[in-house]
Image (cartoon, rainbow, N blue to C red; front, side, top):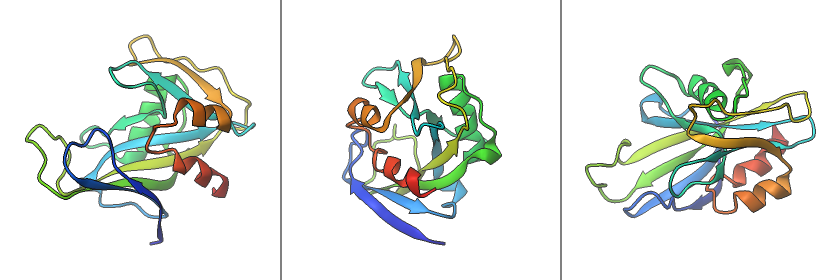
Amino acid sequence: MTETVIATGNAPWISVPHLMELVRADAYPPEHLTTAAFGLVSDARGHLLLTHVNLPGRCWDLPGGHTDPGEDARQAAAREIAEETGFHVQPEALMLLGWQRFTLHERPPASYPYPFPVSYALMFAARTEHSGPRVEPPLDSECGPAGWFAPVQVRERCATCTWLPFVAALHEV
C-alpha cells in the first residue's frame, strides 16, 4: 500500500484537538473506521461536479456523505452523488483517490458520532466522457443546485473546504 500525505490541517466541525491528514492512497483504510465517501467527478472539459448543500453552515461542496450500515464506501459515494446531484455513476467506475484521516488527540463529546481516535472519509474520482451533462438534485435532496465548474470556479466556491488539495491529485489519475 502506498500512502502520501498531501496536506494537513484541522476540520472545523471537530471540537477537540486533532489532526486531519489528506492522504493520497492506492488501498482502502480499515472499513470499520470509514464513515463517509465523496466523489470528485470531472467531465470531458476537466470541470468538477459540485452541489450546493442546503444545511446550516454549508455551501458548495463535493457530493458525498455518510456510509449506510452494510454499505461499502464506493457504493456510498455512488449513492450520494446521485442523491445530491442527480448524476448517476456506477460504483465500479469510481477509483480510490485517497482519504481524509482524522486523528483525535482527546476524547470527543458523547455526541461525536465517529470512531475514536481515528476515522476516515474516502475520496473517489470518476470521469464522464461528456461535457457537463445536465444535473439536478432530486426534489427530496438536502442539496440545491448542482453543476459543473472549472478549477478556478471550484477554488472560489470551495476555498474553505478541507478536501480542496485533492483537486490537484485528479490530474494524476
